[in-house]
Structure formats: structure tokens, C-alpha cells
Length: 78
Image (cartoon, rainbow, N blue to C red; front, side):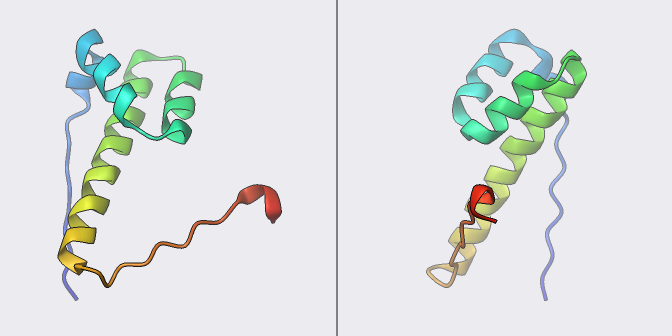
């Protein structure tokens, strides 16, 4: 089994322009989570994590070339 490790510095996400642009690109769930956090460093870390996770999913989906199936569950129906 092949493993990949993704590492990202969250410091750039503390800059207003990077923060604003990145916030537009993440899911509504991640956006809501980021906006609930109080500290600038925590917001940047959560935004970086969401961005990195999205990137990793895109990379994985490309490498799977059609073999990937994503099951979406609705928490409200549990």
C-alpha cells in the first residue's frame, strides 16, 4: 500500500489577502468552522488543514482514475 504525507505551513494563511481568498475556496462546513474560531493562528491552521485536505483528495481522485467512490452521509439522519 502506498502512503503520502502532506505538510503545509499555516503561517501564510494569517495574511489577510491569503486568508480571504482561501476562505472563498473551502467548503461551507470548513468556512463555518474557521469563522467560529477566535484566535488568528487557529483560524489559519484550520483553513490550511481544509485546503490541504481538499488538495490531497483531488490528488487521490486523479491517481485512482475512476476507482474512487465517495459516500456522503448526513449527520442529521443518524
